[in-house]
Every structure is written in structure tokens, then in C-alpha cells.
Amino acid sequence: MARRVHNFFAGPAALPCEVVKKAAEMGVLEFDGQGMSVMEISHRSKPFDKMFKNTQNNMLKIMGLNPDEYAVLFVGGGASSQFFHIPFNFLKEGMTADYVNTGVWSKKAIKEAEYFGKVNVAASSEDKLFSYIPKEFNLTPGAAYVHTTSNNTIYGTEMWNFPETGDVPHICDMSSDFLSHPMDFSKFSMIYAGAQKNIGPAGAVAVVIKKSYADQAREDIPTMVNYRTHIAKDSLFNTPPSLPVFVIGLVMEWILENGGLEGIAAINRKKADLLYGTMDNSNGYYIPHVQDVASRSFMNVTFRLPSEELEKKFIAEGTEKDLLGLKGHRSVGGCRASTYNAVSYESVSALVDFMKDFKAKN
Ligand SMILES: *Cc1c(COP(=O)(O)O)cnc(C)c1O
Figure 1: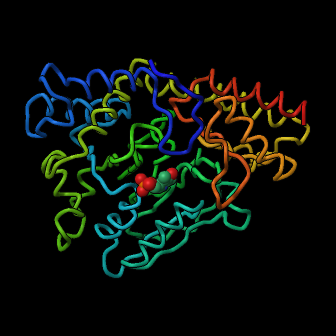
Figure 2 (figure 1 turned 180 degrees about the horizontal axis):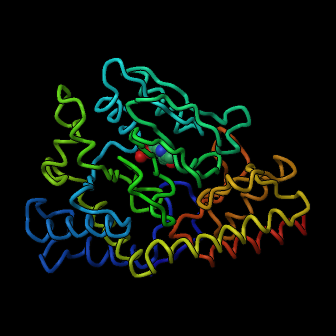
Figure 3 (figure 1 turned 90 degrees about the vertical axis):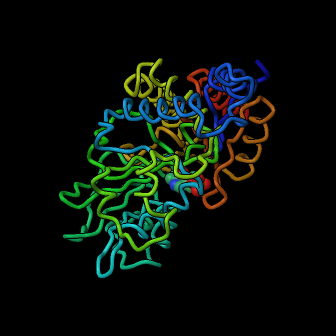
């Protein structure tokens, strides 16, 4: 295996070492004994179809969802395109959509929905620089849907308790914590996630959608944005992002081999405890952006040092030690360590050792 750094980038982000290796050998060099790579084979061929369906089925298996009820779509355009696909399909004339505003990505989703209809911001944490998850939601009875963002990649909050939406369909952007812990996925009518944070490479978005909900979508919309188009063809209406889906398939197998979501969540908790624990015991040297413990993300850990100068030094010295991607997003500054599923406990442990050493010397 080639040299591997400790990768704390927010996205594209770390993939499991075994997956990268398998992707090279089984996908890029030669796919399924076909004498060509997965990048070169027809998406209408049998070996490709088998791999594709296997990936969809394994994803549903991990989520505990029934394939008769839910469809898995792999589409392009990034999670950002879903921001307008969703209201295009579901925010019908005269209806209101409820959005929970927990950060930059929620705001972008709201902006797109406003092109199509009325948006009610059911709750917002903007008053405190998105450092917590709201607990009260002002939901609209009979809304088209409620839209939430389960993990706020930039600010480092995670929604551990979702609003109860009753009969109103719940749609969630899970881009940055998708498949990081067990949850009742059947509460959602639609879940979507850009692959490049937690489940694969950039270029594919996973859309897990309840078929009965898709049936309620508008029909008078362009073919490619209509979810029904893709459901009817098992996500092979047009050429799918084939290499990304292949790698997502390997990640699904990796999750299953590691005890499913229970197993993955146990490691994620250990990593988060170690990292937040180190900061909370640093006598205020490392200051987590998210002081509300119940809102803390296990995937993106944001923090400040006593000065911007020290932050710069911290990031530079970390880079020298192969601890990469520790710079915070430009909109909040400070530091951020993204600790997605594929970031090992060893990597977090190496980061914590560096943090202790840096504090002692500075
Ligand atoms: C990164 C991210 C997006 C945008 O994803 P793209 O695939 O780059 O469009 C949307 N939502 C969340 C929560 C994200 O972290």
C-alpha cells in the first residue's frame, strides 16, 4: 500500500484503507474477471448490473429498510442538486415546506426551495453561530414536507433527536453522517447524501426514497429531476456514476464486515469521546465551538485555540506530522477535525497526542 496520511479533511474525505486497495485491484485494474476496468464496462452488462444491485441491496440491509418500500438511487449533481430536485418534485402550488435551519447547507437548501414555493423556517440556530441543534420546532400542519440536515459539516453539530413530523413526510440531508450510527430510517420519506463525506468518492449522491412518497410527486416536471423516472429504472435510466458506485459498494461491504451500524457507531463514539474529552480537559486551551454537549457532532469536530496565530501554527505543525485537513471552514475559521467512519481510532489518537504535545510547548 502507498503512503497513507492521517486524513481529517471534511470532503472528499478518508476512505477505509482496505477499500482503496480493493478499488484499485478489483475496480480499476480488472473488474470481475472481465478483462477491463469498471470504468470501461457497459452499465447494461450483467457483471455491472450485479454489482450495482448488490450495492443498493446492501445499503438497504444496513439501514434495515425493505426493498419493496424504499428505492436506492445513485445520481449525479451532488447533494446540492437535491436542494432543488426536492421542492421541484414535492413543493406543490399553494403548499408550504418546513425547513430547519442549522447551518450553511440548510440555508442553501432553503434558498433553492424558495424558487418553487413557500418556505417556513421551523427552527434556526443562527442566533448562536449554529453552535446547537434547536429543540423546539414550529411545524406547519399539512406541510409538503419537513427538511432537516442531520449533521452540520461546517459548524460541527449533529441532530441526535429529530422533530416528530407526524403525517408530514420527513426529508433529511444526511450527507455528512450517513451510515455513521444506527437509527430508525423508516421515519424518513427521503434521505440523501453526497457520497464524498462518509460513504465513497465524489460524483454520486445516494438517494433513499420511499416509493409511495415518490408517487405523490408532481408529474409535470422534466424527466431527469422526476424521482419516478429513476425509481422505474432501478436507478439505471441513464449512465450512473459507475466508478463511485463501485467504491460505495465496497464501503457497504466494509460496514457489514465491521458489525454494521452498531459496530461502526461504537468506534465513532470512542473517537469522539477521546477528542472531545481531550478538549474539555485542556483547561480552555482547546475550545470546542459546540459547547452544548448534546448537539456535538461525532463526524466534524470544530474547535478554537487561544489565538489565530496559534491556530495557524497548530495547522502547519500538524501538516508536518501527516495530520492533514485540520483547517476550519473559511466561514467559521479555527480548526476542524473530520472523523468520518473511515478515520481510524489510531488517527484520532495520533491527533490527540499531537494536541497534548502542542499545548505543552505553546
Ligand atoms: C457537503 C455537503 C453538501 C453538498 O454536497 P455536494 O455533493 O458538494 O453538492 C450538502 N449537505 C451537506 C450536509 C454537506 O456536508
